[in-house]
Image (cartoon, rainbow, N blue to C red; front, side, top):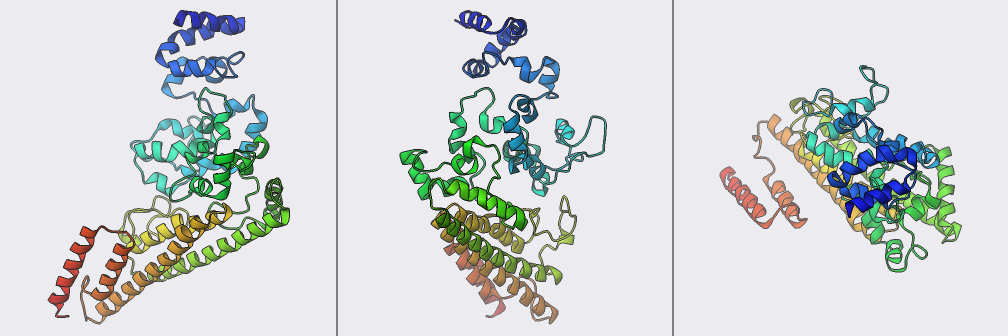
Length: 428
């Protein structure tokens, strides 16, 4: 059967391709049979051979020195590549990578993304503090698998298949656009848009692609008027992009209706930003008083900023104080759910998963900040010792954590027992 397939392939291929493709197929129908099967069933099969994309230097392919990148695809798919290059997807690696030159487990092939061969001069800048704190394995799976979309069309299209049904489904977006920090998939899936799409099809309910890739455009930033952190882009550009999004909305809705809905989402976003800013200001007050435990000077250096307090987009989720941990959840998860839920017309994500959690985060941050200040005052006055301050406030905090599901019944009871014992020890 394999011989029949091979003969058929050679008959279909142009004569100029037959010799080199015979060499590839003869080996890879055994080594990587799925790749051969998928290629044979693709639109590439009649005229695009292995070497057109992969080249002919087999040793460099095996060593990883040669790979199929978005630029490779752009040789033929020029419009799609141009649109992609102007979108936020084209910044995936720039925002999700960092220089690994000082890491023992680094992948040396990654260096050529920013450096010419044998040159230490960076031609491009990448920086992500969280990426730099991870192991090589976590960077490969937990970071690169999504951020490689900048330079890898297979992130969405797969390697050897060309069937566009794959990328017309919103499910392809869910690989990356899901989870606590950017649950656009879950927001869409449980919105009226998503429900209509999944029950009635694209003609009735929009998919992700309907709104963000109209007419097959690869500019996924079309119509977006905010940064990934929820801040305004320049007004002149925002005005133009808003009209582009309204053009999309107007395919189903009255333009004024869509405009009002987006403007409501704008206000929700600004309200969420204000709450976030209040929390950040309070934490910086505590930092200025040197009350964070551990303080920035007492913890491992931040990969990009050293021993300074970092609360912006380069904030870590490790090696920091409890107060900063509360803020990370607030900023990265609950703030994002609030305003992104509003733009995706999802009431539950906007309110209960977002706004409610955001406001409770603020309560927790204010309470922890006040506790740290009281502790410092008592210690300065000699009235107490570290760990013995405001036990009743601590009990309230434990109870609140338990009620909100942050600790199990067993963890709560053990912590409560220990705290009550400390009450007795202090004679309270």
